[in-house]
Every structure is written in C-alpha cells, then in structure tokens.
Amino acid sequence: MAEKLIIAEKSAQAAALKNGDSAFLAGGTEINRLDSSIDVSTLISIGRIAELDGITEIEEEGRSYVRIGSMCTFQDIIDYPTVPGYLKDACRFMASRTKRNMATIGGNIALRRTDSYLYPTLIACHAKLEFIDGNGEADKRCVNCYLKRYDELKDKLIVAVLVPVDIEVVSKRYSNTAQSHAVLTISMGFRDGKINLGVAAKSTALVNLKEISEALEKKSLSDAEILKMVSENKELDFKQDIFGSPEYKRYLLSVTIADLAKKVKGGKR
Image (cartoon, rainbow, N blue to C red; front, side):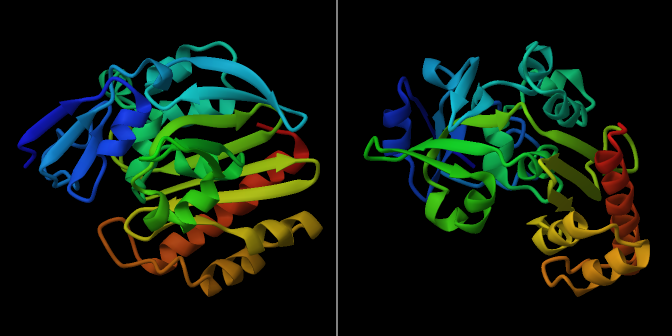
C-alpha cells in the first residue's frame, strides 16, 4: 500500500521521481480498485500537469494524426469531434461512463493488461507514443516497440499518443457482459493494401500477429488456414479457464480474424 503521495507540476519532474517502488497516479481506476496489480510505496500524481492534457491535430512525415495527451480520459476521446471513430469505438468498450470519466489513455497503455480495452486498436493503427525520461529527454516509439521493450521504457512517462486518421480499423470484443473484462479483443487495421492485426487475449498476451497479417495481404485465407497459423503461434498460449478451452479460444480468434478481413477488404463496417 502506498504511504506517500507526490503531486508533480511538470512532466520532467514526474519522470525524474519515478523508480521501481513508485507509480504514476493518473485516473486511479487501477490503483484504487480491490486487488490492484500495483503495489508501491510512493504515488506520483500527474493530474495537474497541463502538458499531458488536450487533443490536437498534427502532421508528421506526410500523414495526419490526432495527438492525444496521456491524461485525456476515455470520455474526453469519445467527445472530441476529430478523434478517429475506430478509437472512439475502442473507448466505448468500457461500458461505464463513470469509469470512462476517470480512466486515461496513458494509464491504460502503461498497465499493459492482457484484457486491455485499447491495445488491439493501437497496435492495429500503428499508434505512436511520446515519452519523457528522468533526464528530461523526449522520445517517441511505436506501440509495438513499447510492448517489446517494456522493461527498458516502463519508467518513462507517457506524454501523448498519436493515432493516424487515414487508416481503416475494425474491432471485435468478446466478454460475458458489457461490464466484464474481455476474454478476447481483436482489431485489424487496413491501409494501402497493408494489414496490421492486434490481439488482447486475457491472461495470455498482447500481440501483433504479423505473420497472419502478411499472409492476408497476399490472399484470402480460409478459416482452417487461419486456425492453423493461430495454433502455431507460440505467443498465444491459451489456457483452460471459465471462459473456455484453448481450442475454443483459438477457433474464436480464427473465425473473427477471417470476418474482420472480409470487412476491411470489402469496405464494409
């Protein structure tokens, strides 16, 4: 249980305070819940840092992005007119408006939950993250890089998230109820003939299914072909639990990938 609260006024100050026995306090939906995964002695509140708030439109490397401050809540994102519809859809996976008014995009990313509301969509759209470290140095990485190099990047403060506006993303979420955390969330991004597939599998993995994406770019795959590729993926080590057997989860993922591929290639939502 945290014994100390530090209220940071600047991003660089907050980043400099971060260590292995502290955590950033954003919306508080994880830290304040029963059986929270966070157990530290010090909390660093970032709620007063102005540069972590706000949503703007920017151009970068010839593409249009919406830049979302890491302290923006899910409801802020839903309400902002120029945020891409695919990200609003992902935020609506959090059914409680009360929670949406608290939960922040930066907090959801930093937690890396395998039942994340947002990760599949952020993977699928090639989202970028802006960071600042304890020395005040700014950095920028794609979401996939953040997942792969988490141990190196975890103490940096996420400043903003950049999502492109010129990409089609479709998603599907499976849960027992609207309020329940999902057993599977799958998102597929499609732009200029290229496919990117993000999956959040509860208690299993957050993964970019690159091989399946590349195969789908070349030709249409049958359900059986996709199932074979899913079964051979070592990152998707599904377990038997109350949500179903490993075989059922692989089947559910496979048929959903096939369905999403038809939607993006056929231009149907």
